[in-house]
Length: 147
Image (cartoon, rainbow, N blue to C red; front, side):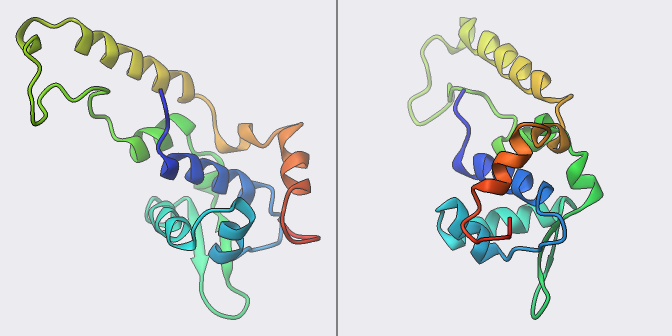
């Protein structure tokens, strides 16, 4: 299974904020550090804020911070939200599959997708930044002394 760019960015952004300590990077700084367009990062931040996982403050002294809910968030739930729980294949698209009425592939792919999500359910954002990942994240920030 391949994750959408927004799902990947959401996970990396949460991991980065989980090791930020007292620093509150801006969306623009995070976008620069992760080498993604600012507009893409801003959309992901808005969704994470809507989910209650990130606080975003504007103005002097503003920036992004991870909430307690964000630190304990299930990676599986996050991936489900960003990816959606639709079918892996589009059997009903512009050209419906002729096997649709008797196909077993769709059900098998749906079960595989759910197994993928279920494997991520017990993993939290805090788990993702445990040793050795946390210190590595601290070392790759584009700005000295900040993450």
